[in-house]
Amino acid sequence: MRAPRTDACGDGVIDVVIAGAGPAGAAAAITLARHGARVTVVDPGSTPRWKPGESLAPRAGPLLRRLGALEAVAAGPHTPCLGNQSLWGAETPGEVDFLSSPHGTGRHLDRAHFDRTLLDTARLAGARLRTARVRSARRAGAHWQLSLGPGGGLRARYLIDATGAGARLARQAGATVVKTDRMVALTARLPYDTSGHAPPRTSLVESAPFGWWYTAPLPAGSCFVMAVTDADLVAGRALHRPDGWWRALQETTLLRRRLDRAAVAPPSGLRVVRAATSCTVPAAAAGWAAVGDAATACDPIAARGIVTALATGIAAADAVHADASGDPTALGTYAELVGASHEEFLRGRLVCYGAERRWNTPFWNRRHP
Image (cartoon, rainbow, N blue to C red; front, side, top):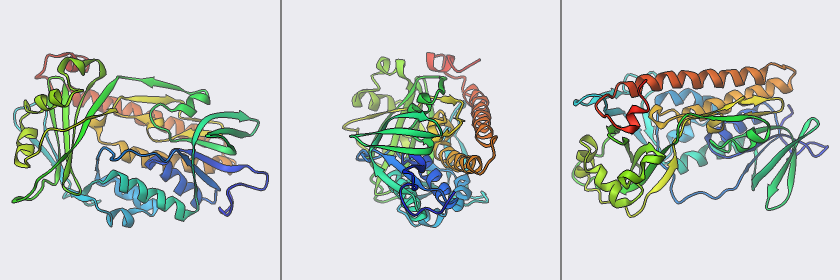
């Protein structure tokens, strides 16, 4: 693929269009642009006032280094994550620290800033950004004909679906999204008063009868808290209402202690976020590939969302470059890699949920063999 100079080749066909500007799409754009491809990232550009925070594991370091974004991320407003605490399957807490990791500590992210950093890196690499939504994708001979909203279109040799777990474009290309559950996360960003004491530097997971809780500190004096359960169990505990969500939080042990010390107040509102597990089959075929959640969306208990997004974005971009260079097996090999990674996750999830046997409730009974 040639060095990126213009938005399209002489025949009006772009090398690669990437639908979605999240971490997976940005990682693919950076990698392809450095391979010499002409890349356009298409994204609606409308972002919520805040994004659910995440703890970035140390193992993301080598991926960010390959993308040339590690220093920019390290210079951002993120705070160190020194490990994970948990109350899971036992009455005594457990802890995993990152201090001995060869890749250094993790990070508690300002997600919006993190996403912008990756997208800025993609622009510097030569990728173009177009504010629009890909409404449909149709294969026309050796090219994709993409319909954009509000009006307009593009033609591209390759298409990368980074639209999220719905994998809308991959499905239009003939793939199937295989769903494992219907989990949701009910999330809030809460003010965090740290006057008189240092803020925590760890994330925290605590199981509950209806599912489990997660919290992590965020930059700028706030914290992210979410309750995770199956969609059909939300109403039974009124978790969709701030007062019901807050009452359930008061029944926790470690989480309540942490938030009590921080003088956190009840939320004024909640955001419901999809947290279900699914896999797109196949994750790639002739002329296209899915990345991030559009390829494999994992239960957040695995804490691998961003790492998987970066890894699949890089791997899919390498596969597209190899296919364009004459390797007819590259995209199929990538699809097999995604499938194997998802199966590995499912096996690990069985072990994880199997370790919690204290609750005889629908959520947990569904997850015990």
